[in-house]
Length: 172
Image 1 (cartoon, rainbow, N blue to C red):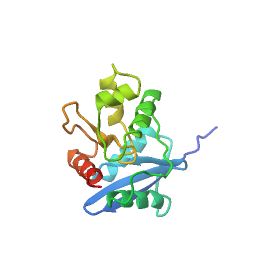
Image 2 (spheres, rainbow, N blue to C red):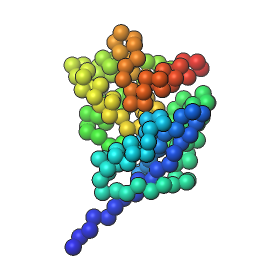
Image 3 (spheres, one colour):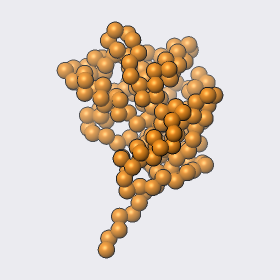
């Protein structure tokens, strides 16, 4: 009987000021950044859906480089991230997430602009759905996407987090 070997999803809690969020990584890189101050179940449910064969294992060291870069970013000392990521999605989602990485630090783009950059100008709603499925908040900067009218729109981390991240980036 062949048994499918389980992979490991390493996780750790990142804490900065009054924010706490779970980080998770495969052996290839960061695969998940949780919503601020959300319970462990958010991570557990996400892994069960996206990596059903894998098991979660707490780590004390593997995610330290990610934590260091997130801390530096939140302190205003870093504009880009260098750690590897392992984000999985459809070809369309991958294209949109790649496009998000082209938004410069401190800038904001609309959903329409992202659709145009991705060469899918008529797929604005699908672009919004793909942005909402981004598993690695902050490092793939979906917080830099705003509504056509200039207003802040939905964000898995919450509008308050989005507002604070945009304020941080504009301040420098």
